[in-house]
Length: 190
Length: 91
Image 1 (tube, each protein chain N blue to C red):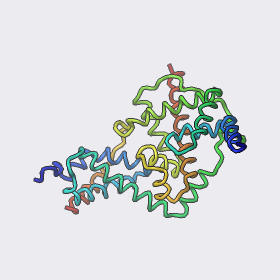
Image 2 (image 1 turned 90 degrees about the horizontal axis):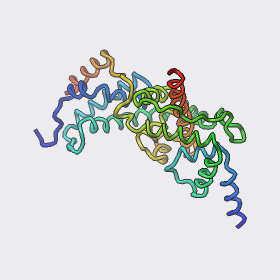
Image 3 (image 1 turned 60 degrees about the vertical axis):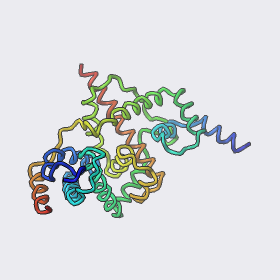
Image 4 (image 1 turned 90 degrees about the vertical axis):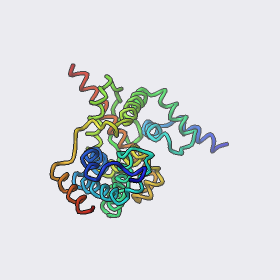
């Protein structure tokens, strides 16, 4: 065996990392079937690239890196559809009801009242990300979870920087409101 | 001079929506004057101060979401079997 070859077989990767890889893909793609396909393609690609594993990271990290490319491929192919571009642009260009036409908050914003249990907060956040509109979720995950630059997101998805900024901002607005509301519910429930 | 005064006035008279967007995108290349304008607005506006705290909670929760996603979602047995089969065939 080569010194840095992964120690596990592809079947073991599926056993040990399958669920984590699936969650990674599902969070970004928002669709069970597409997430499963991405995991399958990633594991097959990893099998072929086994010699490329340099042992500088864990197997999970290496596999996630391969999966990331598969997810980006899936997003890229989706963004080629005129329907997706239209959806993304209309989402970015619609007015946000939280702000008036003049740009002021329409309702006072409340601070997160009680610190959430970390697990509860992550659960609420995962759920809220899953409920974001499709284009908004994809742009948000690329920018905020994967650290892809705005320029790269624009290139990948065929959007303008203003579209990307607006989608990220709107996504954060929805997510932080969902988190703040979770805290509020938790507090009033006591 | 007129342009500089205009930019300063724009920064000082910023509305909540623009201030909120600037807070949401901290690593973007927006002019420093606009950043100061957003910070100035936030000091004065209670809703924006609360919105800033909501954003801070979001950022702290996002960190670590990958490691511990908080949801026990996994591959279905059917999907697992299908992927295992494709791996076998791919070997």
